[in-house]
Structures are given as C-alpha cells and as structure tokens.
Image (cartoon, helix red, strand yellow):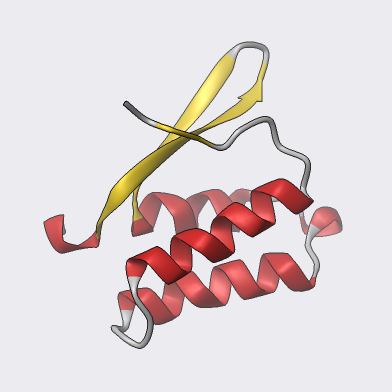
Length: 84
C-alpha cells in the first residue's frame, strides 16, 4: 500500500556490508518480527506496537518511525541512516 510508505525511509546496516532498506511500515514490522527472541525487550515491544498502531491509524507513521529508531539505537545497530 502506497499510503504506508514512510516519508523518511532509512537504511540499517545488518552486517557483512549489507543494508536493509526500510521504506514502508510493513518492512519495519517485518524487520522487527525477524528480530531474535532472545534480544527482544520493552523497547522492541514498543516499536512493534507502534508499527501495528500506525497500520491501524491510531498513531502516525512518523511516530512509529521514531519508536523504531529508538529500538535500533538501543539494539546498537549500525545506522539507521536516511536513504537519500
């Protein structure tokens, strides 16, 4: 769905020189769902919940992106960087 496209897409370094582009809410949610169970915590849960709430129209995509960014910073992922 085009209306689920993020205004400010980002790229996350995922290791070995590879990056994962996050351009839509669905990609953000998929990334979170693929995250190892052993490394999940409260900030992970908040980010996942924000994605689901944005898809339902209860929060904005930008709010979900902020929650996701907080998760990536807490998880010590290289990035995220805005895609230019």
